[in-house]
Structures are given as structure tokens and as C-alpha cells.
Length: 158
Figure 1: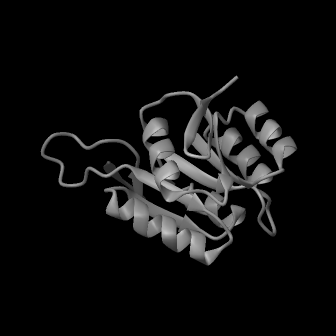
Figure 2 (figure 1 turned 90 degrees about the vertical axis):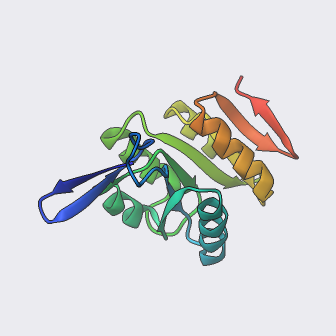
Figure 3 (figure 1 turned 180 degrees about the vertical axis):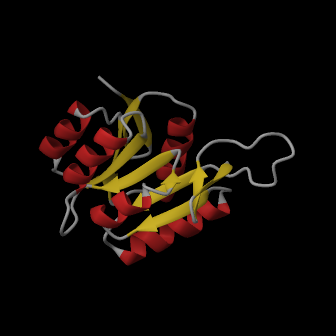
């Protein structure tokens, strides 16, 4: 990860560090309105060697994206205020190549299809298994196109 000074604000950029750079963790932005989900994902990904930023909703996530540049965003679709889809639209306008994984409840396939039309290749159905999410995050970081992780299996995009 590279750190760039922008005025009085430090901007953290995603990516692997150069050799000898003491900071080498990729950054993950978790956007979910449920504090328990955010805490669980923070602890799990931090333990896995990622730097983790948390946002409790879409508006907060968009503010953070002015200063941090994550390798991937984990985005809940159903949130009060700015919805996950509206947040995704804004992310696509600002950072069209940013990798986004959407988290959604079972049965919200219309929303998933809309997100896929906006370039999302990966989604996870809640409730999810933490091991499945870790596997999916590794896949996303490696740049493999996958649409879904469900019931312990990764299902390729169609």
C-alpha cells in the first residue's frame, strides 16, 4: 500500500507495497448497516492480514472513498438511507474499475442482476459462512471472475 499526502489529508492507496515498504496490506472497505457484521468482518479480515475500513452506510462509504482507495469493497445491498445499489452507482461513476462484492439476503435476485449490469462480478448470499467469504475475497483479489459463493461452493459467472 502506498501512502500519499493530499493537502492535510493522508490518502491510503490499495495494492501491495514495494519491497522494503513497511506497509503491505491490501485495503478492504466493508459497508454494512449492521454493527455485528462490520465487527465480524473487521476482525476476520484484519486477522487475515488485510487493512480494513468500515462504513455503516452508503453515504459514509462514499465519503471515505474520497480518501481511501481500497482493493475491494464489500457492500450490503439493503441499507437504510442510501441503498447499496445507489452506493454502487456512485462508486461506478467515481471509480469504475473498483472491485465490488455485494452481500445480499436470499431472494433479492432482481437487485443482484441490477448490480451485475453495473459490472459487479461477485456476490454473496446472507447469512454467509465466514470461510466462504474468505475464499471469495481471495478469489476477488486474484482477479478471477466469480458470481456467487453459496453452500460452500464457488459458482462461476454465467
